[in-house]
Image 1 (cartoon, rainbow, N blue to C red):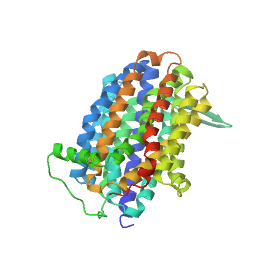
Image 2: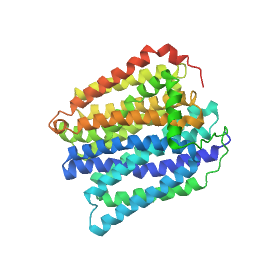
Image 3: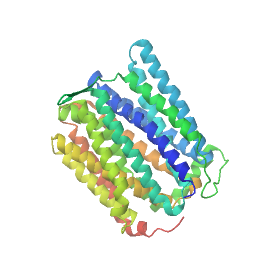
Image 4: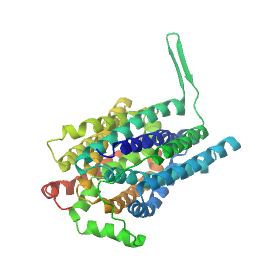
Length: 417
């Protein structure tokens, strides 16, 4: 692999920033649910912010195909550093971070996600030879989820604190205030920016840069998929489980754990750890398990696994089943993502991958906004009503499986570039 060093630096930078970012994104929903006691307000903020990212996501895709991916990463890290450190500084000056700024950090990070991850995968494709796409995607998943395990474990310690005695050994960690978590998050962006600065690479294929206006470039992405309807169906249907992963992590799990299971914040963070372990396992083994099957077959199988998990969670009231569900969902979602991205890499040229991904991302965001808005209703915050959200997740997954079953043979044999 000619760009091995560049890929290592990219993975390292992503892991470092993702670690603290993961703790922040676990701490904020729990802060609203348990500390503030107002999960419905947080869910409404999440729904509005997610809807706004619909328009940002389209623009971000055009930027990814227009400018060098390295420069985009440097800009993301610099802005994120300034924002997180400024909010943390406000918290230290005022004694605590104002609730509005806590919500702002969450919304800002959502906007960050919508350019960070498409850039990450486009950059990965740009520096990777075609026959190594699957391996690179697995590495991205493994590193990302290993970081999720660490950030989840860190969240267990920092959100609730630790007071543990083993024989004569005593470990005590006081819960961190959210301002300190934000400060740590901001500093990791600075370190990530330093690593990205030293990335040097040779593109595996010449990059075709479009200098047309943004609106024209967005239209190109839509037109590309319009001319390839099967690819459009595949890209959207295979994205469904991801919708409910994000909704579960930030909305459903905090309410489910607090209201339905009546458990503490360490259960929430531990659930995320189990999810990350499942996703990590997928990074190591999914490509091997399905090496004799095509990508569409493996995606259908993993979506069925997620479907079963949604129903089990809706019909149970057990912490250990929640952990098992999170583990299975991690395997399913990460496995789907690896197989999905590899399939898209093999059917979409690098010079237009950002714009086509923006179309899929925007539709995903729109659907996510609808579901988050629905779950912001006070009905879902009362008693065990949150379980109905998982029934809806199962129904949405069934609906998404229909076009994959219906067009299975055509998708399997799709050969255009």
